[in-house]
Each structure stands twice: as structure tokens, then as C-alpha cells.
Image 1 (cartoon, one colour):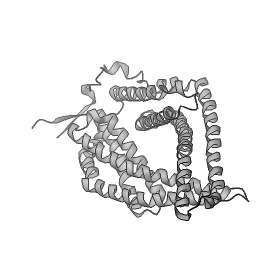
Image 2 (cartoon, one colour; image 1 turned 135 degrees about the vertical axis):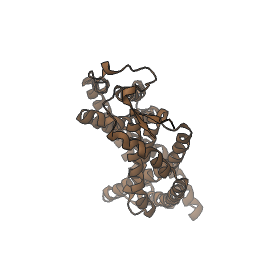
Image 3 (cartoon, one colour; image 1 turned 90 degrees about the horizontal axis):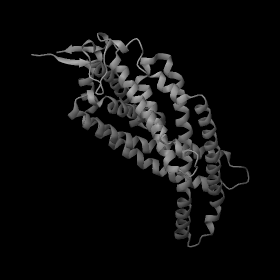
Length: 340
């Protein structure tokens, strides 16, 4: 029987994907138990990294199976995301409840906290349902069986390959281009949707950098630090935008609930001070973080951070003469191994 050729990109990509799979499996017992919110967070991040890896290495994976893998992983990511977002909201509300100035009525924030806690209980059922479906699908086991033996070939394949660095350069460059495409909108504070889209693009760029970071050792660290900072700032802006958009509707609905229960609007007056305090706090925090983001953005531009990142992922000069890199990133013979 003829032996199948295995490329350096398949080996490297399989290693990246199997590590993400291991990170997912480690967190499953804790997610099921629900006692520590960090299990949800870590598993959510691991599923996102896995999806980023599948998107990057899709061309070198078994095509018919990748579609199902992506579908199953996306489903669990969504349920984990809803639960994690609510956990973050609860943490903030507990903090706000403690910091409300003495003499200001806290009942409104307490009511909001209760409503979000009720929502979180319902989301845990969704998490368990999605988790059970994911485990029943056998996706993790199938991916490990297919990719594990390929990843193990790293011991016999030289990773110092022009085609692998070529993929890194292309992938990072594409993700950076997408991220920077939102730069024209950042000086308009009302571009809420564009800033949110930029946050998602920043997250994708960060995951792409993480995928190839080990090729560059220490050289990728400053760029990863920059992208984490971008993601944190845009994430905080987005969190405030969500509250600012949703709180007026919550106030309206809670006021109506009060009327339906008591037959008058009077008791709602006890809730108003705390809710107004929290809404104003979100608006002030949003303005402060947005200003900080613009200042740091100008600093990154002044440091030529984005061109520096492009330069950091160029194919090393020592490798350029060793093989030709065509647009499809075909694998030259010296970077192939045989698998039975």
C-alpha cells in the first residue's frame, strides 16, 4: 500500500489543535459542576482557540470532517459564552453594590443583581445540555485519534520550514489587515458596532499570533501584549455599551412590573436611584476607557507597532533560498514525511 505524505503544516497544526482539545477536556468536569466560574472562562477560551486553529489549518485537515468539527465546537462556544458574559456582569454588579455611596438607595442595583442571577441559573441548564451534546458527538475523541499520530511526527520533521513560516506570515498579515480596516472608525465614539467588530478582529488576530508564537520564541511576546491590551480596552468599551443600551429597557420593564404588582408606580421610586447611579457609572467608565484607548492607539502608531508586527512574521532570510513558496503554499519534498 502506498504511504501518504504528511506535510510540516499538518504536523504543526495537529499539535496546536490537540493542545486546544486537551485544554477543553481538562475543564469539562469543572464546567459540569458549576462551582468555579473560571472553568467556564478557560473552556470558552480553549474552544475559541480550537476554532481559530481549525480555520487556519482547514486546508490541511480531512475536509469532510472539519465541517462537523467546527459546527460542534461552535455550538459549545456559544453556550459557554452566554454563561461567561453573565458571570462577568454579576461580578461587576456585586462590586457596584459595595461601592454605592452611603446614603444612596441600593435597592435598584440589588434588583438588577437578582434578575441577572435568575438568568444565569437558566443559562447553566443550557451549558449542561450543550456539554452533553458535545460529549455525545465524540468530536474530541475523533480529532485526537486523527490528529494525535500526526502531531507525534514532530519528533522526526524539521519545523524550521519556509512553508510553515509562509503560512504564519500570510495568516497574521490577513488578520492584521482585517483588524486595521476598522481604524477609520475609532475616532467616532458613536461607532458602537464598528468598535465591537474591531474587538472581534483583535481577538482573532491575537489567537492567530498565539498559534504561531512558538516559531518566534521571545519575538512574539511584545506583540501579544499589545493585542491583549487592545482586546481588554475594546472589551471594556463593549461591556459598557451593552449595559448602556440595555439598562433603559430594563428600567422601563421593571417599572411596568412594579405597576402590575402594586397597581401604582410609587414603589419603583426606591429602585430608581441605584439604577440611575449604575447607568451613569457605565457612561462615565465608557468615556474614560474610550479616551484611554485613543491615547494608547496613538502611542502604538507612534511606535510603528503594526509594521513591526508584519516585520516580525516575515520568513527568515536563512530559509528563503531553501524552497520556493507558491501562492497555494504547496509543500516541498524536504518538508514531507511518510505515514503508513
